[in-house]
Length: 147
Image 1 (tube, one colour):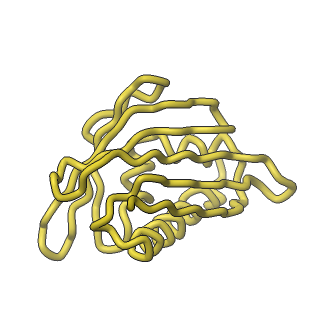
Image 2 (cartoon, rainbow, N blue to C red):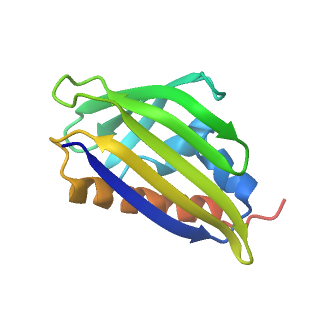
């Protein structure tokens, strides 16, 4: 059975900045790859019906895996949903990732749900990867840089 994972985080940053981190190719390369991986966005058409493609490369052995999907929902600063599928035939199926952004007193509450995770990916490994990515997202969006 495909797996589902859910995460909730609160960031000390406005919803617009956190939302932008999920759609800006340079930002995605900085925070989305888990520890030990680099990322590259190959395609980004950020709109409902638009597609994206990305790959992660293991820094130690150079092996890459690529994935991509289509944007299903797009409400700036509030909600984002997209499909994901791997190019690797050993990781079949289509996942759906839905992210909601809610302004709260200290910043932005983010809820993430990823459904349809292929059986070969243990849910605990998926959770670990997301936790590492969310640590990096925190560093990116909470940075207080004077303008």
